[in-house]
Image (cartoon, rainbow, N blue to C red; front, side, top):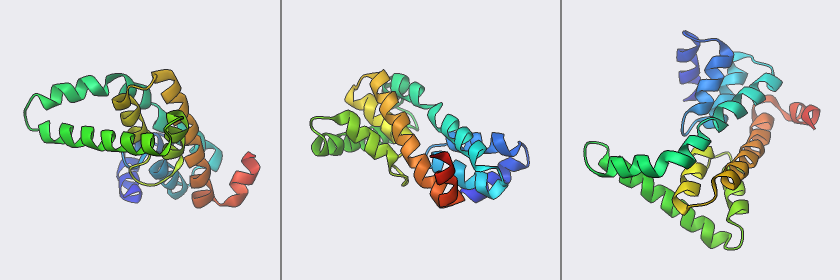
Length: 168
């Protein structure tokens, strides 16, 4: 999926802009951005920075505004079922975090976002934080640290262990 989107976007934008845009997309996020960066031949340092920035840009907006947006969408119309699905997904994820980390949701959120699998990234973490009513600043910090952890894993998978060793 990252390959298809990156080849499409590369027709219209430079490789760094393509990676930035892919990193902002839900589901793909940093994972897709790092894969696209490797496919487009960007150096790992540039890929890492652009992917981190692109992935984190939507987070504060999601944390601050998603509850209002979902409330508007739930009123009716073609996106009502999507809003209900999204709210249920975030609530279920929040319940799992509260179950696993009853004393430290902050740590649970960080670890949840750090796992570079579909459905566990910054977008879902921000949705969970907003639906649980967690403090925005603390949530954004946990999500940022989680994204950095996922970036380390993706750096190894896309550019190899030597790139991570040079970073450390």
